[in-house]
Length: 223
Image (cartoon, rainbow, N blue to C red; front, side, top):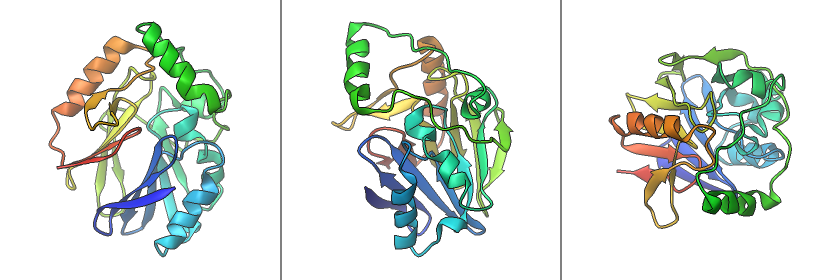
């Protein structure tokens, strides 16, 4: 796992072989945006210690959606201390283990083949269930300890996909609603439950004033 500073002393990306976890340093402790695959918690804890923190300094987890490569370690991290798990109301039942997510609507054989390739080595099970202490709706504001994050409902990848916009810092966490290709191109996210809704959600985010865009997959974009 690689740790890269994106904003001095504030924002870091923890890069895993599959997906990314983002760390925001607030005045009251730490916020994690997504948690990686199951089993990622020890590596995340090691990264926090490397930055001079303890796992118990995590105050909140913001989940962009329920997929196992994003919510997979939320349950373990929630056990580190006083950690509030946030998820959109539409995905919260899936995160809690009380419901199943909608199936993917593949747009062609190419996407189905890509899905099979990407998921060949991933767990074929949901993320371990965890209690969602705060269910989010569009426009809800989350205090990150001196910085506000606005939850932007971004349905399409999942019914409850949500992006997080920090207007003061001009940072956007897209989850899997938008991705970045290995060549650097910004592209729509793939493997969507509702491709038409996903396209609308992407267009909405592209209208925001952002200097750092943090994708669920692909290198962050700093402008």
